[in-house]
Structures are given as C-alpha cells and as structure tokens.
Length: 156
Image 1 (cartoon, rainbow, N blue to C red):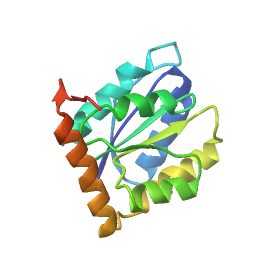
Image 2 (cartoon, helix red, strand yellow; image 1 turned 60 degrees about the vertical axis):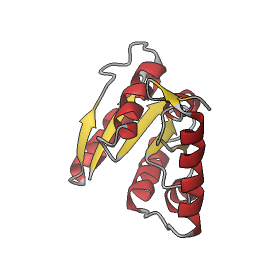
Image 3 (cartoon, rainbow, N blue to C red; image 1 turned 135 degrees about the vertical axis):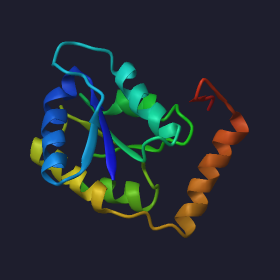
Image 4 (cartoon, one colour; image 1 turned 180 degrees about the vertical axis):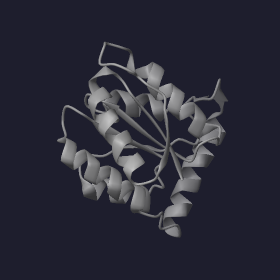
C-alpha cells in the first residue's frame, strides 16, 4: 500500500509525525508538502492529493489542516474521492467500513498527536465491508456521473 500525504502550515507538525509513523510501519508514502509551517493555502495541497486519488493513480491519502474542514471540502470536490474528516476511532472505522473512504482528513488543532496516530492506524487497518455499503458507494458514483465534472472537479 502507498499513501499520499499533504498538509497546510497548521498540519505540518502532525504530517511530519504521521510520515514517521508510516515509515516505521513499512508503509510507502509520498509527501506532497508543505515543507514548513509557513502560511500556505490548504486548497493547493488538498487538490494535489485529491487529484491523484480521483485519477486512480494512488489508492489512499491523508490530509491535515487546522480543523480538517477546509481540506475535506476541497478533496470532496473531486470525482471518486470520499474524504472523511475523522475525530475519533469510531469515525475512522466507520469511514472505511461503510464509506470506503479513500482520504483521511485530520484537524491538528482539534486532536492530540496520540489520538491522530490512533486514528491513522485504525483507518489503515480497517477494511471496507462491501455489501449494502457498496450499493451506497455506487449511488455516490452515480450522482457524480449524472452531474458531470469539469477539470476533475465534481459539479455537485
């Protein structure tokens, strides 16, 4: 499994720690920035990750900003992206089991580092249940398809 990771300035420290955790667990990563905690615009980084997920070039990604809200909004504009903002182990598990979330979004200002790492671990180790949940994911794809896209962005 290869995970693509990006953050804005608010998520930079968490991103660094998450990358170290993934490396320690022999999970291949691609770091798309930012490289410092100097102020940057979260849409630039969320789109880098979401675009690669949307194109099917990478299966899963992790985005981190201050609250996670901005990154979630941007990532979910891309067709085929199911970005889940998770605040605890229950939401991380449900996002994978029920929604087949392909991007995990975390808020560095609302989580402790320990909780964030536990969420990452749960999210990575939880499989999609399929079945009735696949039917629901298929409905999401149908909605995206029926509304079309422009430059990879969903028009929903």
